[in-house]
Length: 127
Image (cartoon, rainbow, N blue to C red; front, side, top):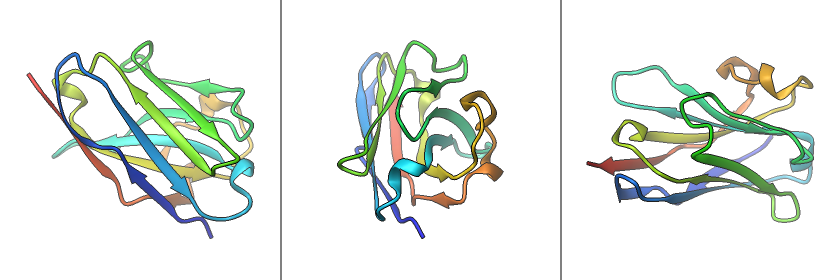
């Protein structure tokens, strides 16, 4: 069982930055790939970023590539999402998730591959 708790969301102006954090329980944090997803009102939950258990591999969709950066600190059982150059279309509830699936990061984009989810943290980007 892995318990995930996100924090760091809030209101920011377009062009601004936010850093989200996700704290995980358990002693096997480094064995999980960690992903970030987001869900805007009336839309499907979409993939934002993923990082391997070691932290050496990451993957992003084109919509956030170059603006968002995922990282992790396995000593602190925490994964981060640094979001820069934010746009109004980035407004959503952001969720972190843990996956035990062993696969290239490019394959870990589907919600079904993640066993554990946090409760989400809202991000609002004003224009």
